[in-house]
Length: 573
Image (tube, rainbow, N blue to C red):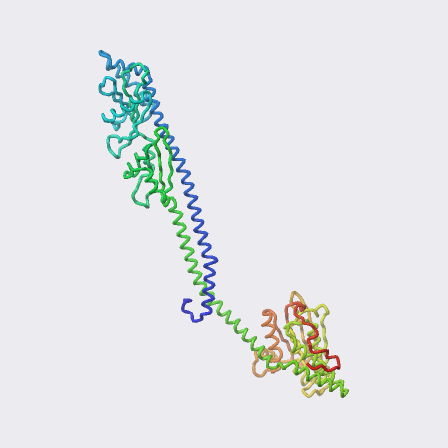
């Protein structure tokens, strides 16, 4: 059912308001909670990755520093090794045993290479400007003459100290080859001449290569994870996993990556260089985003299903229910209108009855005076009462007035008995609920019986007719029975009373039981109602069930403003 094509605009507005409340109070808060939870979850993941990567970066920096310090210690120990110095000094002497000396020098250098456990090479330049001595365990290390000259010049400016060129060199001269790091040291000025001008150590920077290659750069954003950089003292990128970044300023790169990456740095204390890693945030939160997208889709589906449910509920379930309530309300209005048709002006009726009573007093007709007084009490209470609930005691008192009038009308041909415990008298009952049932018993139950009454009021025999009103309460239910020993009814008549079927007595069907039953059901609903049992020739019993309720909050003041009808003084209202 499409709610936008419904003709009932009022129901459509109710359904739309219900849908808006659901979206505002349920869907939107859940969506906001998901968004906020996703934001916190992503932030927590980023913080965890940041701490892990920062610790890993610090470990890389510490490992590279250890590697550089180890090679520096080897170079320093060689330059201060007296045996090594004597061998090199003797090597430059004329007539020396050159082959044996070279063998000893190579033995010392090989021992140092084994201790370093690195891919490295030694370059020794001599003071006599003879060709440098080269010993290496990896062919990829190949310093040019220019590199050797530059390092010799740097080391000569600071004798006895380890100097670094501040650059990296590609092994074998290729950009894709491992990068080598070189250091140089010249003998201290106060040392005895060894013939060594400069000792140069060049080695593959294994730690740096591992750091750069830990994240292979990929131009595809879906596969891109992080960038790794090595920058010198001036901030120039010496090495990066993205070759296009080499030579750029590290500060410019940091500015570009700041919005999309988390950036971590670590310092190489030995060299004064900087390691930097930029981890892509999207790659870290990709799985979280996918889960959130699924949840967002689920929320959207729930809203769509609720729209469907909203339509079904309001126009398939609620609509018939509202229609039923509307019909009940219409029935109640009809009952009230029907009752209003028979309502006379209270002032006119009571003043007229009071005038009749005063005339009976003047003529000393006590029967007319008592009857008019009883009728005035009954009429006054009925017409002036606004409450729909009164106490059972009050209802029985009104019933006494009515029975008195009926006895005056038809003669004292029936007996009225009240069998009600005093504890039940304060309980509340609908006002004027018993009078129609007693009236039915008098007018229809006893009509035509021997000793009963007739419409003319003449006695028909010796049989004494009896009406008994009894009450009991149990488990929150008040049960009232009105029983007579009249002529009773057949099963067919009893079945048709509440259906208003043709042929049933009008007094029973409309004025009596049907109205009483409808009042109770409209006021209290199920399971409270009126039941009827009758046996031809034996009598009829009407059983009324009501909820146990307190009548204190419903009772009005006893003096309703009509005056004391027991007072013989006439008062015009």
